Figure 1 (cartoon, rainbow, N blue to C red):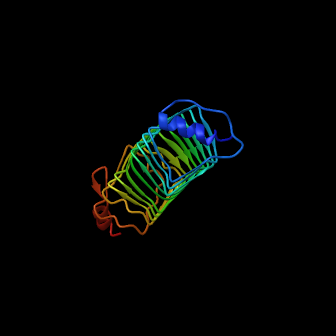
Figure 2 (cartoon, one colour):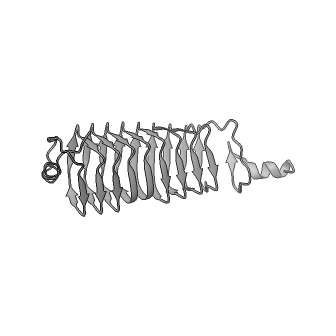
Figure 3 (tube, one colour):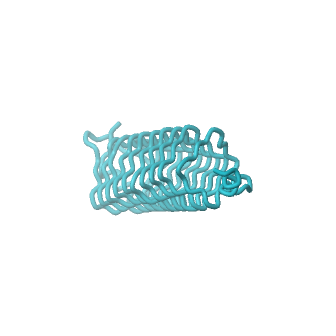
Length: 234
């Protein structure tokens, strides 16, 4: 798959036109460009390059993004439906108010990426690596994922509903006031993470091992675990 010709896409984006154009022989790069209200439909993008770009109110439906690099850019009010992202690389990137419905993201790498007020619904997220970023008000609803690697990340007000994220690795990450409702985290490992004021409801904790952790105020089904261990002489 190749990128559509730069000029045609730019004109369509600025004009807010839906559709695609003829294929070009070389990938397209956007450098220091400001796009407002672009809309893409049934568009295949191969190895796009965004650098120092600001895109607002983007709407993409049934599109595929393969490879590509997005550096030092901002995507605001992003809406994706039935889209696929394969091996995207994002560095020093900001995503504001995005929504992703019935989408697929595989082998994504995000470094120093800030994400705020995000909603992902019924999405498939596999082999995602995320590090050195801030995530505010992320909501994951009926999403599935495998083999996540999340390092040195702050997740404030994370909300998950019927999340399946198996075999994930979370290291030195903070979950400020996180909420997990019927989450499946089988085979996951949390190392050096902060779950202060987080809540888990309807989750299966069978076989969970907790060691070398602070448990002040930890309650399971209303039982103060610290007090329970104290009474047991542990």
